[in-house]
Amino acid sequence: MKKTLIATTLSALFIAPTVSAIEIYKDDKNAVEIGGFVDARIINTQGETEVVNGASRINFGFNRELTDGWKAFTKLEWGVNPVGNSDIVYNNRFESVQDEFFYNRLGYVGLEHDSYGSLTIGKQWGAWYDVVYNTNYGFVWDGNAAGVYTYNKDDGAVNGVGRGDKTVQYRNSFGDVSFALQTQLKNSSFYTCDTTEEISQSDCEQEFIGGAKEAQQVEFNYTYGGSVTYNATDKLTFTAGVNRGEFDVTFGNGEQTTAIDLIYGAGITWGNWDNNGLYAAANVNKQENHDTDNLGRLIKDAYGVETLFSYKFDNGLRPFVSYNILDAGDDYVIQPNFNSDPNDVFKRQFVVVGLHYVWDTNTVLYVEGRKDFSDFTSADKAQEARMSMSEEDGIAIGVRYTL
Image (cartoon, rainbow, N blue to C red; front, top):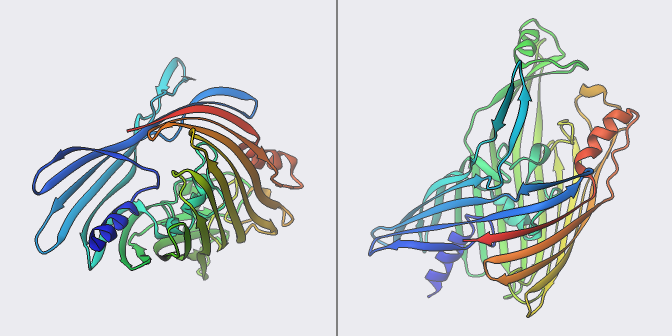
């Protein structure tokens, strides 16, 4: 019984929380399941009202029983856009441009044993996500302060803290303690130029070849991370973890330097989001060279805090409130690009209040509102406006149908 519980726990950690699946095939050796959800919402923000997709997705899981207690498994997940997104563009004629219906979210394969743990390879949720996911239950405005969705709210693929690309991960559990260790085995490089003018990668590369110190070749390759989870009671959980990478920078004049991409922190959770009663979660992190501001400039150092409090009633109503802050202070910009001022301030800070009606386990009606308290002060008011554009107040209503 205990081994079965451990195996189930390990399997659950490979995907985002609050995910259900339907078994569509099973024999003595193989099993196939399908999961995901469709989420469509009406949102009002930045002075516009629009129907948008709510991160809808579909996934397939495959499991195969092997010998001596081993099991092989794989998961494939794609994001889908059920509401459509066609734009009219003009290029000597009118054209209708349709965004892709499918895009890759997860894809990994692994081996698992009740005693020896599991090993997975591919695009998967990072070990760091174990530390902070418990504040990430808002449907519309999820956590953007926990260092997961890095590089201006992307999916955390580059540095392995979200849905990490090219990740190798080991997990195991002993009693009430579980842990994850991971590395990204990848090679990536690009050119960047410290200039106030827009410049292409190819032109920047030519500047580098020409020996200009303002042009740099940046390599961002392997990353490493780990997390630990302690289930102190059936309701109280503690988490902690770290993730690290390196930017190796070579200047056009031959000089070299290294910048460390580092995030570490801890979290605490009470209760279960899907169960009736009180749910409370909080996490805190410290980061260096880990994320970017809303203009794509690397943040030298910052701290982040996320909190979430909710109460689910017997009638299915679940009100909640969430507070997030990512504070880099001033003098946070390493690159002098974009006419940056050393006194530029970056403080992403907002409150989300929501009400979910859990009609049944897999059908949720919801309304969520966001109030922004951010500070993006800059001497360049046009730049300040660009920084603030994606952080405005908003309200949304929607439906989430889970398979």
